[in-house]
Image 1: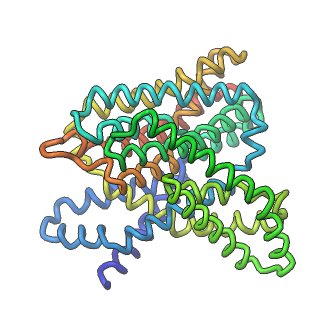
Image 2: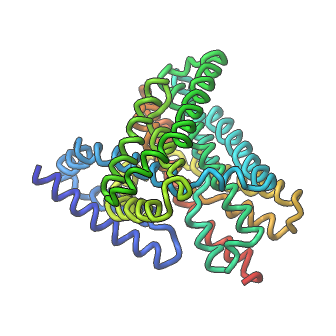
Length: 408
């Protein structure tokens, strides 16, 4: 227990320090926190006698459970931040950009993985994971650049951020398919996927009806009590209840947390309660659980394993960047953006972040990255995808500033 407490203390402090440092240079905090985990893992390599002790602390059930709790609260926060009306009110142009920015990278990722990975029962799930990881978009890194350049509320900024929101929703929906394929050992046929889609529709219908017609009445009674802690307890309880429903229907529990947050809207539960919950969730996620989750992901990155598959790493990064650039940039060009701003749309959609790392954490827990005998490519897959997220997230702000500097 002493070793675990000491390890958690060091991980939290180093993650927060690196997260703040990343923000100081214009990057998202999760990038710094993830890199902190990678650096810690690298620093431990020369200390062979202590490796076993460090691995025991790293693989401790406490850190594993904290990571699971972090995923719940991070997805809950993502749902609270994303109001349904923002997605529904997004222009058809943003939807077109979002579809192009999802479908092309998804297809490239699946095809690339199908070519690179050896045949196994989990190959369909592994290929789908690569496609999903490549298809999602991180909002914070892009939003920070647009805000810095005064373009956050411009047509360009609204289009990119609306499309990024839709991409994240698609990513979480695809997560249910990934975990289903993994659980069935890759044996999910069209009928099974159709049944999964039907259960997903039933889940979204039930949670949407509850969110629209039931939760506001509960929240109204809570506001009369004026107890913020009680509001948080009910929000978490709703998330857990939805998570149980998702699991009962064969979906992943993470969808429950997302839907609980999604209908926690200011016009339903009151602006004061909404603002209070946003502050509380931001403190929980950014202050403690988020850093521990992202640093734990970084700890799992094996640079040696990724270096053993340099071609796969390069191809994944290229597919991730150019899939977004072309998939989102061409629809933007068709919508009337000039060439430079269409490129900015594609580049702005290229950053990955929390949603992708959450997806990787979930599918890793489901055993999707479990290699067969002598299967080195699968052993490297997790590290390759995390490094892709880091590289694209680091490159996107730099490329955006270069493309948009004349608009400043």
